[in-house]
Length: 344
Image (cartoon, rainbow, N blue to C red; front, side, top):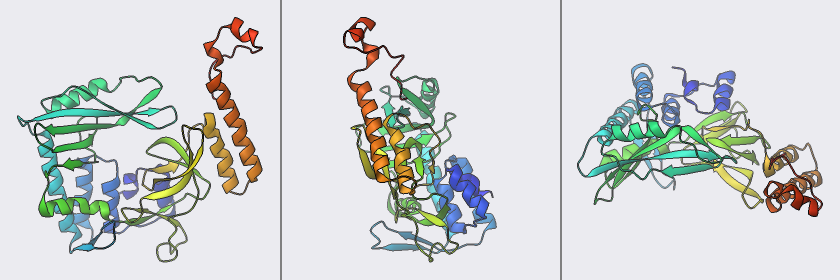
């Protein structure tokens, strides 16, 4: 099995491949869970673990760390998990007279932020909802680009406080991100189904303080610390490690917000983390200065002066957008017409 191909981040995958990092069967199982592969591909990979890899114990750590649940067999755990997930898939697609289907699309705005749009038409079957998703695939939204991978289908029950939703591919194949409410799964199966998301594993990553990163979509942030560096216990080879799971679910970084301020914030510490490869536009140009300051390449005064220059330019475009006015009006105030409201 090429487990590196299951890691969503091309940078983390390439780093692990380059250093020849080997994962345990449990770590492989968790990586498969966090991958973007569809249900059939994930189940095939889990079955390969059962067929070809040694069995081991599984420990679920609750987020509060006040309890732990021990599963004696990873093989049995995966078999039971696949059984529950297959049941959910069958329930999602099964026609029921008191259930309707809707879907949600995800777009990315110009600054990389996600924008979600729910359809207003209920559908009677899963297949009809998927057909509508396909028709909506190329739907345009002003100043946004559609996420070609992220469609969510919801099954809602009339007069009942329960629903089932999941991310799907355009062909209707289920990917991941189950959301289940209202007792659709109960008892031991409910505990088992949530257990795999609680398992923390440690994965070597190439990122360093000052790197400009992104996750899942194109919104950039500057990594401010190496919060995943756990010392010799988890980093025997000297590499930085990212914890995937409930014990650690965020990394720290600077980002720009809509009010033009720089924020220190938490960002998901997930297998989606990658180097930002897009163009820094608008006030996001400041992130390059922040990055170089954290790396010790420039002084604080140069970083702040760069921010002030970019802020002034963006404020000018916001307060006096010259494309709004006629040539004659601009001439009366001593300004010239600009070609457009670009980001320089």
